[in-house]
Picture 1 (cartoon, rainbow, N blue to C red):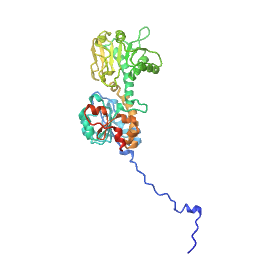
Picture 2: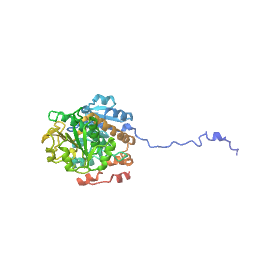
Picture 3: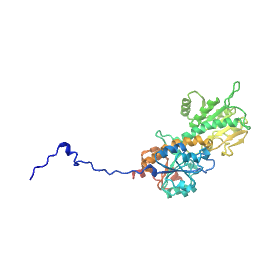
Picture 4: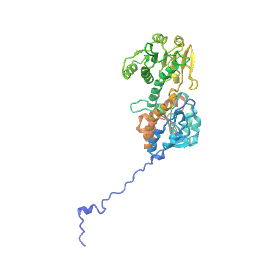
Length: 406
């Protein structure tokens, strides 16, 4: 028997004895497996679009396929050519767009569109609970659509970014609209800020939330005289801190409010109810004592309105006159400035879509993000919003329990 061959220490590790074997790893699908559909919103008075061309450049950079229905951005002053140059495919078939893995829209889905969707998709859109029907929810369950409500999505601070940004738009626009109505033929013919020797317009703002805050900032910019009413003193303190100056403020005292309204040029209702209808703060008698040609803008009209004289109006016919006072009660105020609102929504929605595409697994995203879970009201054949389930007598399934099983 011959003696064993000696191998040097260096050769020992170069002859393959300890070569690392190939490790089998899970191969993730490329982001291009996700297609995103952007619809031309046909809902009456809706002029916005969910995603703007500049946002698509970011998404397409991740390799996603984007389908845009022709005309989707026209009302927001975005042409089909803007989308195609950003890398999207312009589709003349609404059904094709509705077949995308992820359908993104800025108005609630319609029954007709849900019927056209093949199923097992993700729907990212507003919910608008007051108009939800049993048929709508039944279709989501039947088609196993995972539905995310834009207005209920939360950020890491527990705030609602879509609601906030639209409230900012509404707050600023109301003051601009008030100035326009005051200077109209029906109005009092005055400027919000006045000029040398002429006093400014007097504006009452009911509500010290986000809408109220941005209405105050805009009115101050015009030089108007402002009064702010709210029963939440903490909100008033926060508003004054954010504005950076002391304001004329008050709790909502009916006697003092009625007194201030008699000399007001503009009254803006910016109250919000966390559940149910907004309480009526201004009676018809108070309105009848206002100056002829003065203006009421009821931002709360989508929750019923906080003026007894308020009636729902539209973009085509936005105002009516009652007791000599011009009333503006359009529910979708942000749609009046469609381009700004579309860009604002798109800025918030885009990172969410990026997260969905990066995981390619909606379960994983929902598991990781409490804020996204908060907006999920339907998940693969289950209703995961307890309020909706009880309201329509449907089976409720806790989303966290579902996710725990994956």
